[in-house]
Amino acid sequence: MKFAVSLIAVLLPSLALAGDLHIPDMTAAPVGFAALLVFGLAYLLVMAEEFTNLRKSKPVILAAGIIWVMIAITYRSYGLHTEVEYAVRHYLLEYAELMLFLLVAMTYINALEERNLFAALRSWLIQKQFSLQQLFWITGVLTFMISPIADNLTTALLMSAVVLAVGGDKRRFVVLACINIVVAANAGGAFSPFGDITTLMVWQKHIETPTGVIDFWSFFSLFLPSLVNWILPAVIMSRFIGAGQPEAETSIQCPKRFAFAVVFLFLLTIVTAVSFHSLLGLPPVIGMLTGLAYLQLLGYYLKMTHTRDCMIDREDCEDIGTPVPFDVFRSVARSEWDTLLFFYGVVMCVGGLGFLGYLSLASEVMYTQWGPTEANVTAGLMSALIDNIPVMFAVLTMHPEMSQGQWLLVTLTAGVGGSLLSIGSAAGVALMGQSKGMYTFFGHLKWTPVIATGYVASIATHFLVNQSLFT
Image (cartoon, rainbow, N blue to C red; front, top):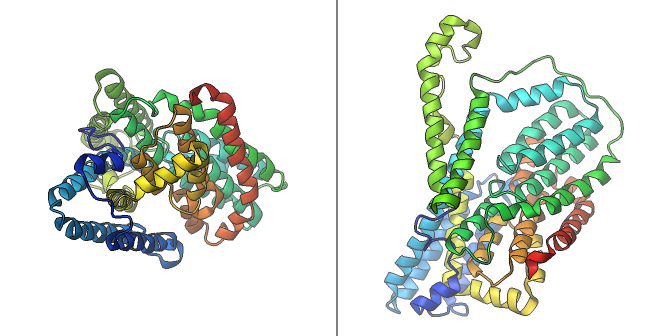
């Protein structure tokens, strides 16, 4: 979900944008303070989503509209209405490219869910009657392995369903296993461009500025630091689970027709996106949308052969009575639209603050006065309280001059820093809702010092194994 059709729209630094268009600095003006207040209030509502049940997209979309209306009214007095329009189109184009990329990835994940692949995996794990210790490690390993390909939220929800199904009333196991899943999901998503929105955003920036940022293969330099980030807290927490054997379920779930074909097409779509960019210089989103056509053609085949296959084998008719056995647009409709719209609100809000001059000011303080290492580690800590999307978008919009090692550092810290608190990542928030009160904010907070050891160790590992990238 990244990549820009014109590359002019890909996370251009607001400082450069302001400089090119001679936009006055409004950081000390009433419109600037008002914009900060609006964004702050909106984000307080985002952080309180668990208690208010107000979807996080609503306040940031409203805030984005209010901020840009205030900007437009103020800047018209300077005769800069065309510059405001240009800036809005700049951020809209940037968002549209990221959104389309993410939409294709979400559609494939939903198609896999519709084909019962995730349910079959969950059923298999439960039927095997692993011990609680074994399930703790199996769900953690699978989460770490799957999240670089699928998004970390979907992976966390899948694995937590296994934990809740077998955990029963074993509260300590459920809490520790859910924490382990959150940490593994965020760590696994940090070393792959497809693992998290923030990594996609960083890869997108490489397309516009091929120097000083991260290309596709360089992300995998973060594999070892990400592994350390997950496995160190997991080793410590596993010692507190104790012995136990969960009860097996009697129900068995099986994949539907062509479930593994969808997996193959998803991998082929990723290869297409990477190849389009690496070999042809095209934005990867073009490859992703091409890959969506693969899924559409498979859906057409399933539709055309459904009646014939039912006549041959009644057991294969999982959708008897349904006029359309598989429809790709159902998977599109079931995408995480709240997340996609939240991302729109964040892009427009942060873009507006950057237009007013705040991101240039923050960049000067953090990356000039503090230094890149301190700034990037702080960005990771901020993502524990604030979603990592606005944190990373702000850093990319600042566009500080950094080595590739530092860009990898902020990618790592923004990705795994959200594990420190349950509200720091979408995976943590989702699991709190799904666990029905067993996995909570304070239950996670109790183990934050243990998770922090992984955070510090992963940063140290990055400096150790990727030392040559900091020059």
